Structures are given as C-alpha cells and as structure tokens.
Image 1 (cartoon, helix red, strand yellow):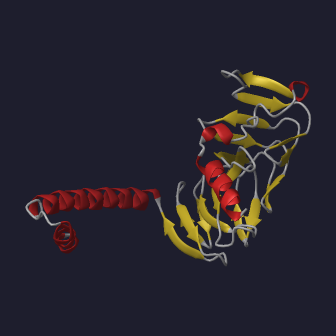
Image 2 (cartoon, one colour):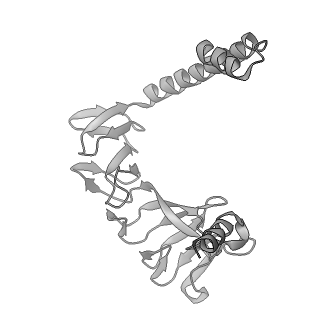
Image 3 (spheres, rainbow, N blue to C red):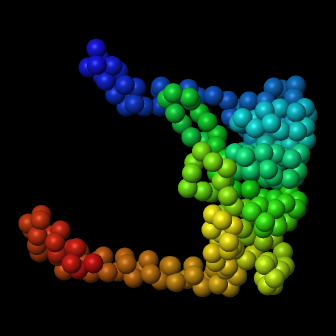
Length: 229
C-alpha cells in the first residue's frame, strides 16, 4: 500500500502543468455585475474597477477598488478603502502587489509580495509613513504579521529627526530600528560598485577557466578552479 501511495504522489508531483487547477485571475474572479472593465485582455479583463464590495484573492475590497494585471503572473490592487493584508493594516488608497504561486493541491493562488504603496498616513512600529511611500513588509516568521522591513520615502522629509531627500531608502530591523539609510546618491554609488564587482568576478572566472583548461582530471580540475577563484 505504501508503495502504491508513493508512486501516486510521485506521479502527481512530476506530471506537469496538466494537473494544476487553473482558477480565475484576480480580474476575472469578480462577477460581471460587480465590476467595470477599464481595459480588456485576451481572455479576461486586464483592468477592472469594482462597482460593489467584493473579495479578490482572499482580500475584502471596497467598491471603487481597481485591480490590474502588471505582467504574466503579477497583479496590482489599489484599494478604495482601508485594507488588511496578512495582518498589516493599510490606509485607503494604498496599492499592493500580488504574484501567482502554483500548487497541485490548491491550484493557482495570488499572494501578496510584501510590497505596498501607502495611500495615506500610517505608522508601523512607531515609524510614520505618508502617501506615495513604498513599503516592504517581511519577517522571519512566515505565519506572523510581517514587520516593516524597508521604506522608500516619496518626498524629502525628516525621519527620526534627520532630513533626507525624496527617494531615500531605509532598512529596518524587526524591532523597528533603522538599520541603514541610503540616499538616491548612495544607492547609485552602490549600484555602480555592485556592477563593477560583478564584472570583476566574471573576468576572474574567465581567467580561471583558461588557467585550469589543461587539467583534465575531474577532481583536480575542481580543485584548480576552487583555488583560483
């Protein structure tokens, strides 16, 4: 019996996309009588506005909320009213991102990525946010309400008593303390440094491949590359 069960489970896990339960997308899951189509898609609307309160991807949305496709597997929701996602309360007018996750057991699911754009003023772990700020919520415990992990401010203002320009990015520890603050200028410098480091690694890899090309023994070749890198 155990052998048969194992065989069936292996077949279910490896049979491919044919076994997935492909449910309606966030835009297609709302009844026609409860939505206004703002942009048509190939099989389902690309963008809708709710004309009545409705549940989309497990979220209770107010009338006037807008749901829009942002790519093959991504959607965006702009909530007309306050919305709570995974225990995080967001003010009216906030925008969140959803991404599709497949499961042979539950079918298509659209999960919150943790990214939100604040629709108004709010506080998270004592940190004030304003309309337009980009928020990212993430934590170690996947079953708990995620804390604010990152904030990018939409306009220049004082944060913890210090002035920062618009676009400054803040990283937070789980207790709400600021771990790092990166102005747009600093972000550009870090981006350049990362690109330079990437190019250096790629150049080093090419040099190592040339240096170890003559070593034909598999184990010795791996040893050569490991010491070269």
